[in-house]
Image (cartoon, rainbow, N blue to C red):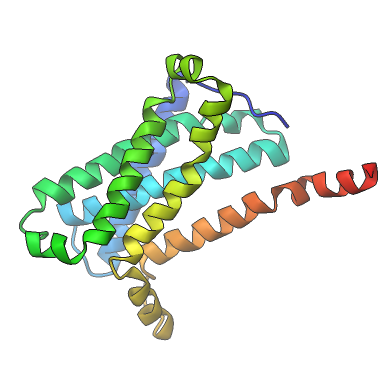
Length: 218
C-alpha cells in the first residue's frame, strides 16, 4: 500500500499528539518516583528522553497500522509525534549540558564521551528529519531523497540505543532481571517495545500476505 505524504496537520491532530507527549512524560516521572527517584528536573530530563524515543516508536507503529490495517487516520499522526520527539530530545540535550551541570561535570563527559557522541549524532539526525518535514523541503529534495532521509530513522534509533548502552543501562537490566522486584528500569521497557515494533515492521510483508502473494504469482 502506497503511503501518503502528510506535511500539514490539523489543530486536533496536534492537540492529541501534545497530550500524548505530556502523558508520556508524566507517566515516566511517576514510574521513576515508584523506583525511588523523587520528582525533579533530573527525572523530567530522563522522562523527556524516554518519551521522545517512545514517540518515535509510536510513529513507526502507526505506519504499520496504516499498511497492515489500512487505517488512514494513523498516518496523519506520524509527523506531529516525530516533531514532538525532536523537541523532547533537544530539551533532554539542553538540560543535560547546561541545567544539570552540577550532576554532569567534565569528568562525567570525559568518561562517557562515546555515549555523548552517539547521542549527539542521533540528535543531529532527528533535527534533520524535523527540518525536512515541511512541504518546501519535500519539493526541493524530491520524493526519493526525502523518503530515504525519513527512513534513516531506524539508523537514528540504533544510535540512540548505543547512547544509553554506553551509559551502562544493560547492567541495570541484568540486575533487575536477576532480582525482578518493583518497577523494571524504564530503559528496559523502552528497549523491549523497540524490539517488538521493529520485529513487526520486519515481518510486515508476511503479515499483509505480500510474501504469499508473490509466491502465488510465480
